[in-house]
Length: 321
Ligand SMILES: NC(=O)c1ccc[n+]([C@@H]2O[C@H](COP(=O)([O-])OP(=O)(O)OC[C@H]3O[C@@H](n4cnc5c(N)ncnc54)[C@H](OP(=O)(O)O)[C@@H]3O)[C@@H](O)[C@H]2O)c1
Image (cartoon, rainbow, N blue to C red; front, side):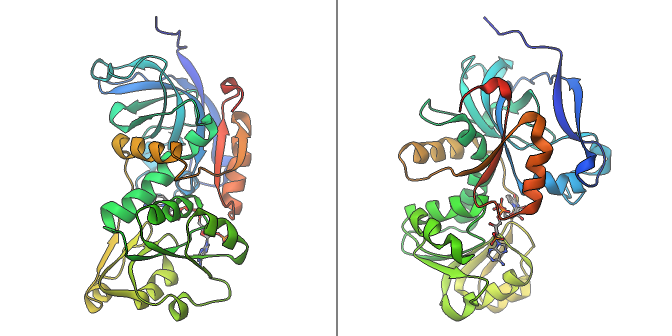
């Protein structure tokens, strides 16, 4: 039997573009899942830089006409409704997903495409599952879909101590690459434990003086860090960025590829990543948890930076984690 679902729900929304005062809790209609979607009762929703950029009006894919806009791109929770083409997922299944553009997980419920879902085993705490999808898929797609990273290659991960970078370190090491990273000195032991072979302190060292040549730079910083990165990309290599479009003239000069990409939901890849988590290959590090009503505090923490692990909002109804 399907559980009762109310008609309305609470959601944290960007009511206009601006500071944290533009983030408001509103009572809105529970979304109706489409034929290819499921409705998830949210138990945990990871926070990511994109949520803050969206609120501030700095995320180009969310424009003024999309306001008010429900924030939150990571969800873990339980399936409570299934569209006609999403019946393969059992009612009550514990799942996580990177939710697509236009949907928001900082709410009681979110409708998500079934193709974005991965099951969450009972051994995985729900807060960890809510922290996983966007950052882990970004790392996976950057290293392998875009960067074509192979065993035995050398990769430099710029900004390895953040949400995406920590997953990237573990994935790159697991695939057999030699992993160089840039991070603050106090992150050295944590990143070494995750799989970094060499940690370069970006505050006291210039990576181009010590890294040598690499097959791939995975750039999570952009700006002048990205520009300087060309100095270490070897001929035939690649510079892949989540931020700025790399210079194509520099790419041509180095006989390399320069790519900027946007991560996308992918349930198949996410299920594979969840398996790696179960096997202990990848650890999900939650730096801080916030009650749903304290979501603005989570955004303050996001804005302050230096989190070194993921930030997660928990629904009170989700109970223990
Ligand atoms: N295109 C996409 O689809 C996509 C997807 C996900 C993320 N992103 C973007 O990718 C970026 C990274 O995401 P994230 O979630 O990993 O962010 P994050 O958690 O904020 O991590 C960024 C990390 O970089 C470190 N850092 C800052 N300056 C640095 C420098 N010059 N050199 C090396 N490390 C430095 C910071 O640590 P300290 O300051 O403490 O050293 C921080 O841990 C964000 O800008 C995000 O918006 C894009």
